[in-house]
Image (cartoon, rainbow, N blue to C red; front, side, top):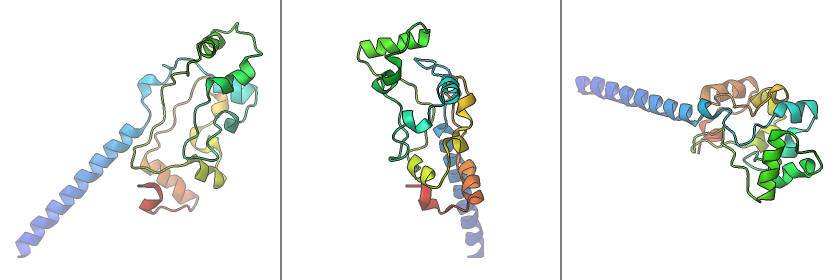
Length: 173
């Protein structure tokens, strides 16, 4: 009997380590893909819009304060400003083409969390976090920024620093 308990303990530990490694891999794959960092249909400059022009993040990412996702601005939202601007800039010409053809911009998603993770921008904004707390100083980034890894350890560090819940069910479905 003693011998069986030792073996079953080793098996349980092995399974636990294996699951940890599998979930660690899933978290890593949930992060943004470096290979598509600058491979967007329009080279959008957060530095120009948020920095030089001072446009608030929530003006373009309108859903962040009221839904689980921040959302990507529609072509029509972009055109609320750009319709009165010159189309001399190459990227503005590309935007105008999408508008004229009534096609959405096929942005490549750069931030993605695994499906088993529950996250809302809304809850983080209600906790008085700012966009820059997680996304960095986007107003200094000339192109669409890729998010930090957003892996579990990164999130837990922030939760512990801010005395937020670290209960598994807070973030996991």
